[in-house]
Length: 364
Image (tube, rainbow, N blue to C red; front, side, top):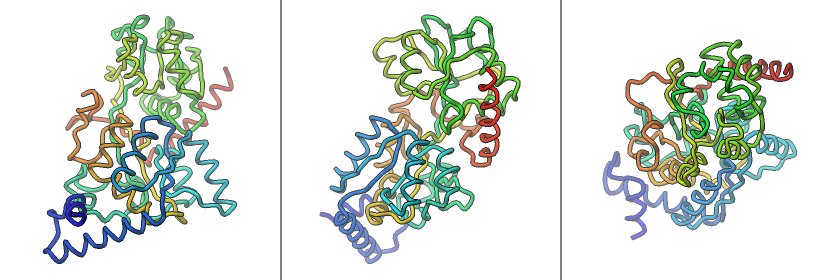
């Protein structure tokens, strides 16, 4: 029974030669599970997302009986803490889930990562037909360290519909209308994260003058706590939120609050995001077998479905139907022209925007 379950999980019907090869692979997989169970747990560093924190460890433990110690903090804070630990010779984390800025400018740039690609051995994970563009999607230049799991169309911003009508803000330039001065909230664009992400897309589309007009002349309130932005949006204190949490906005809508996401803008490309859906294994991992088992599971149909549903994102696997939990606007359309804001080639531009924003906001 155990071998049959393993074979089903691995998708052995695809790409395996004969019964002997199938049996050998099943035995290797059983050995990996056994070794992972002996290690006892996996330490995962991920986003401070309550649903992910709950659902991911529960699903992995249900499948393999292995505990996931989930460390959920803001990317900038967790990266700094991890770097300090490692400089002291402490290696406490196995796997990281993070956004593009933290993954590229911290984990990758500081050479904290071990090659992930060789660790992915399950046939349903290595099968190229299961992935967008016919291959696993690696973000790093070497194409071996950082696997992209999400590719979601993001809202441009959110509004309180009791105070702002969608027709009033159907373009990015509509945000510059003097009537919205002092009524916009934004996440801190100094730090890696959604605030810098959105400032960068405005800069790439419209240039520095637009940043000044939006982030200085319109006098938005800038905070580092997205929960505060969500609360202000719901109450109408700041009825336009550039950086609200879309999952939280959906929950507000279910509760009947007058909030909405604005997607299509007449003067701006729609954007794609990997969100926190970039995964990597750290070097000197304390639980190497559990880490290998986990990354194969998270890249499988089962594991990635759990993560994408919990996070509210579009998986990069072709065999998962995200329309079961997402609005159609969030799912990329074939042939549409999107700007991928997590392209690593944009890292220098994001740093440039950060420097510009520091100068602009200090001048207010």
